[in-house]
Length: 286
Image 1 (tube, helix red, strand yellow):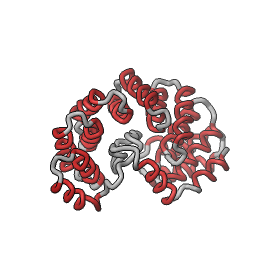
Image 2 (cartoon, rainbow, N blue to C red; image 1 turned 60 degrees about the vertical axis):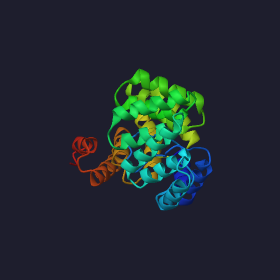
Image 3 (spheres, one colour; image 1 turned 90 degrees about the horizontal axis):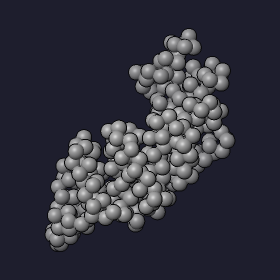
């Protein structure tokens, strides 16, 4: 299994990621994950075609020629958000829903931008507005479920993520998010099942491997946990939590040199990582 995981991760490169994004681009008008998104919160799977920072000027020209085009405002809002200009993004999403009050994707996008600004109240209202406008909007259920999960409203979050999975059974992120809830509730076997489903649907994302590794640790499956933390680290070698998890898996397996090495890598990336520091102390290597 470990060799398979490493082979899979070594095949991941920029071209593969770009191809995956292009395959999804024509399917959605919804904002994808942004730089600095909340930790372990995977928001929406797809991007809107043409919505990048370099296209803001051309999108502005479109809006000037067609000031009643809600889609153009929504697309430019996505471009502003990707550039980190959330204030302008929110202004464009607001204009889009003023033109078309049933534009559910624009509500979802504005909610995601509000989340980036730490404004969870308006974000929650917008996710709910998106669902009211279109009760089949899987992205809005996913976004609201993640927000409710972050607020520890777990039954409500679970219901939203169930809906997201029912509406979009091929989406990886709702399975990942629901698995995190099962994990928090101590139901690690069900969490592993959800992480399996997330990985099956998107084998190039690191977070579900890391999350599954934690549940495998909790269920005493230490060899498999090593595989998963390796896979997560092949995606992001600066993931201190994955290094610390790998250290704990090796420690449980009695492999002290590998455990110490992994814990030390975690502290190199994040000197304040408490799990890694505790592991080094347990092994007399602090």
